[in-house]
Image 1 (cartoon, helix red, strand yellow):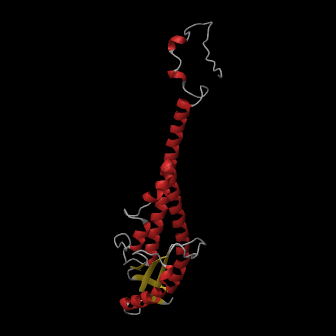
Image 2 (cartoon, rainbow, N blue to C red; image 1 turned 90 degrees about the horizontal axis):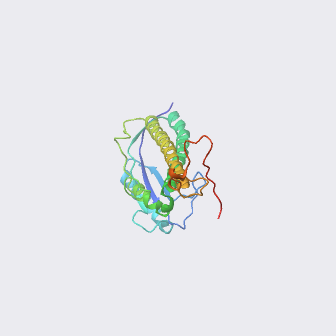
Image 3 (cartoon, rainbow, N blue to C red; image 1 turned 90 degrees about the vertical axis):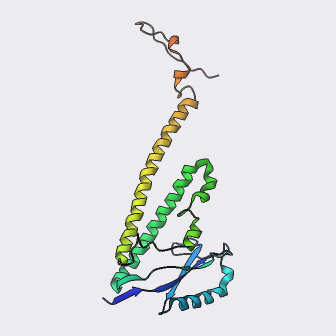
Length: 224
């Protein structure tokens, strides 16, 4: 159980140009890359050297102000090397699960927007800003994820939150689909053929023979 003190690295966030194709671990195209290097006692110097090196490849980056920004990560407690290795496997699973839930959220929002689906990107905001801006200006939320906690504890907090989001999504999606199905049924009854529509607004009570032991009024639908 080799003891590791703290995780102290410098990270650089790169937003790639649309023409730059980099395949990430899940074999999907990635718009962002995070490069991390050891702080080596002086984070600012390490960051300056990293920026200087990456600047040689500026043609691969997007042409906006967020193409290359410092990605702030606080000094985190690592614990033992065994714990760190074990967490690396679990983080890969959590990463895949989180991506799956995020894609479900996007798909669900597209279904809710229906005819306004072309406005989906305008509605995909994080904290009131587009995802690329949020990522570029990312700040660690110490209130939600205390840096005094171990990496294991932070992992568990994230896992619980994503699981809760997925559960809420399933609940709300089920309720939405139920309401949508009810509305569609009502619309079919109001606008469909006479075979499925409610005839209360078409046939009046006065047109029926009521209270007779020998006569029964039947409604016949005749095609035009």
